[in-house]
Each structure stands twice: as C-alpha cells, then as structure tokens.
View 1 (cartoon, helix red, strand yellow):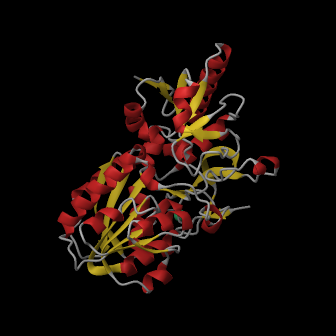
View 2: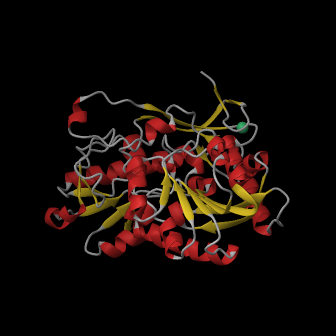
Length: 400
Ligand SMILES: [Zn+2]
C-alpha cells in the first residue's frame, strides 16, 4: 500500500523511523478493557521527497482519537498555564487588543489560555471538539464551540484580530484545509499565532517519543512555509520557544500585508544546513532511538536485579510511545503516578501499567522515579525534591 503526502499528494516512499505497531497513545484502558483485544497501528514516519513534509499516514481519524474520554487537560501543567499567560500579555500589547477585539483559539482545550483574555475583558471564543475539556472551558466562562475546526466552519465565524492555534496543526490530517480555514477566519490585518514542536529538535535531541498517531505531521519551518503559502498566508515572524522540548511560534498574516522578519530566513537557513527536508537529514535518528531503548532497558533491569523500585512519573502520551517502542510492560515498570484524576485508576495502552494517584508516592517510597514527560522536568524537580528523578530522552540521565 502506498500513501500520499497530505500536503502535495506525492507518493510517500521514504520512511525515516519505524516505531513498530502501537495502540493510540491516549487510549488509556479501564480494568475491564484489559481482558479485551487491543488494536494497534503502524507507527512509521515518512518524509515526502517532493515537499519535505515529515508525516504519519492517517490510520485513525481525529474523531477516533479525540473522543469524549480524551484525557488530556492542559491546565494540569502549571508551567503550560504560565506559558499561556505570558503569551496573552504579549499578544495584547503586540496587537493592541481591547474590548472591541475578537480572539479565537483552535483546540482551546479546558480554557488554559483563553481564561487570561477573559480576565482582560477581551472577547474570545474557543473551538474544542472534545466534550470533557470543552465543559471545563465553559466553567471558566469561555464561549466554546464543540467542533473540529476546518475551512467550512471558518466561513461561519466572525473574522478575528487574533487566531491562536497551539500544538494543533500537527493533529490535523487535512492540513491544507485547516490552513485555508485560518486564512478565512482572519480580518484583513489579523494575525495568527501558531505553535508546534520544531522538527529540528525532534531530530537533534532524538525526541522520537513525540511521535504518536495523534500527531500526523512533524514540521520544519521550510515545509510549513510552503503549506502556509498554499493557503495564501505569509509567515511574517517566528520565535524559538522552549515548550515541548523546543517549539516554534509562527506569526502568520494574509499574503503581502506585512513585512517579513529576518528571523524567518535565519531558521530556514539552519534547517537547510541540516537537510531537514530530505531523508539524508534523518540518517542518525534510528540508531539514536535504539541507543535510548538499550539504556532504558539496562536501567530498569539493573534496578530489578538490585531490588530497587522504579516508578514512572506522569502518564503522558509520549510515555506510551517510549514504553511500547522499548517493549516495557508492567513487569519491568510496575506503576505510574499521575496527578490528573481522569487518568488515575486506568492503565497505559499497550504496556498495561497501572496509573495511580500521585499522592500515593510518599507511601510507596520508590528508589527511583522515571519521568515520562521530560519536557516538564524543571517543574517536576521543583515539586519532588526528595526523589531521584530520571529521564530517558535524549539519554538516560539523573536530575539532581
Ligand atoms: Zn509533499
């Protein structure tokens, strides 16, 4: 079976990494489901030889992945809320937003970001297809449309001064239509701010665990610029930000309405030098992922030998990619603690490791904690000072 590029429809022949067959990363299981069949899908990443877009073929539709039980609530992470707060302050100044302005956020989750616009009396609307998070968002007083964003629905919206879309472009199979919708939603002088994990860091720091079925695309600025232009949007500026292991915040506007900052070309030149739009730029990724697998397995086996208890910290989706790629089950890692109530009592997909309340940690007294959401290590180190914290990516490491 040959897949086609979701941007330019070229046949996809070159794959850069194969993480085996895996269940969807956010399909946390109840105890009853442990006795049923569990579906897995190939987790094999391709690069388009024509436009350079790195992508997963669409095995699962967004409707199958972002269900009513979708368990990710953005507000759970205090550092992510802080990030949102600083963005809102910056955006209000940059765009001179006031009570007459209009703001929309696509994939507004539980209102982690729009709550700060509400506090400033700036009218805003959230678009969020998953029921549980949309409900939380409404509790914060945010008008929330419970739908997937696309060009058709964009036509029915009032045009906005600012459109925010953080960590969602990668989640969209029909990326061309999504970008077309953004173009439609913006006022003539309106701006869109889009954040996504930068492909450059995924390669540089072997962040292969950010690859899972929900993430259909892995974006370089070069590939994203082409996709934006195809939708009549210019990338007018770009910032490198530390979230999710290194992301880009890209500012977009209608074509030929604003001057384009030098920052755009600067990053494009770096990407060119690393050959991020051809298979050549990814030749070390497979071996580096394998090294991480061996290190992590050695770490867990050695701990077993020494009768040390290692507990996982944070039942993050990326943890599922890591554990399932490494073939780690509940016999090697018996427990994972998580502070999110919606995950407690459930089991990790594939590995079937039970997830328990973070509060139990003091009682269990593990010898070592393996932090799965390594992007939050600073926040977690601060909260869990008495434990030995380890992360596996980009290499196995103790955080003191
Ligand atoms: Zn392509």
